[in-house]
Length: 330
Image (cartoon, rainbow, N blue to C red; front, side, top):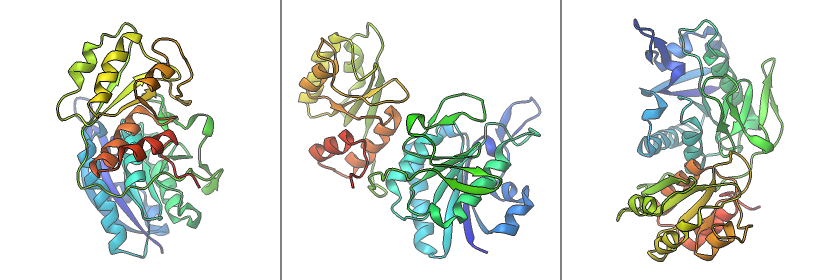
């Protein structure tokens, strides 16, 4: 049988209700496999209990350590078919994207999770884990980047968003759609993933701050957020990438200090662009030196910048990469 590694990090898939009825960490990686005897009949499993925490407890340093763990297992074992990572859904898309940028090995890395804890009779965790194994064993999964396997769908780490707090079909990839699906146990691929820029695992991470814009927002908010250690500022703007006009002077001052200001959108899907020429519009932002990140989410832009600036990437090159959505233009 082919060899598959399970790296357990925690999340609802590894939780049960306690005596008070609250959901808490309770299940190890080994238990996840033992609870599904059929998995051991289809693959040769190795288990790594990396952590057992809710994903709201995971930060970029945790992601960096996880990336090193994945990288090391691939380096140590050329026979390893793929790696499955169990994770909480709250920050699943962020960890998946961080790994997609950091991991260079072409073998499949699949993140999976559940919306219902292991106490529930209809928990979605077992099915999601089984489907993740099917993807890991599929030779066509090679060179598709890091993916998320949930609700019988396969999503690219770059594109996927969590849209609902509790539904099992909470994750979607917008207009671009899922990479594939699982049907009666068969892996069906619908499209190729866009090839994201591969930066490798960074030694250090840059300090990147996020700010969500709101109507009537005063410029002092930006001044308070940008500290001496701030290396980039990501502003989640309205629509195509527009902001209250009173912020322009402060953004210009931040840019003049050599701190990149990157514009994303609070819209879940669609591209930002310097289209509008009115005060506060995208063209105004472009004029004062702000960058645009096309359709990459606020959180993922922050992680990409943390990695790239942490490695000392030239800012002009970084601006060009973000303008292409942080994908390789083939």
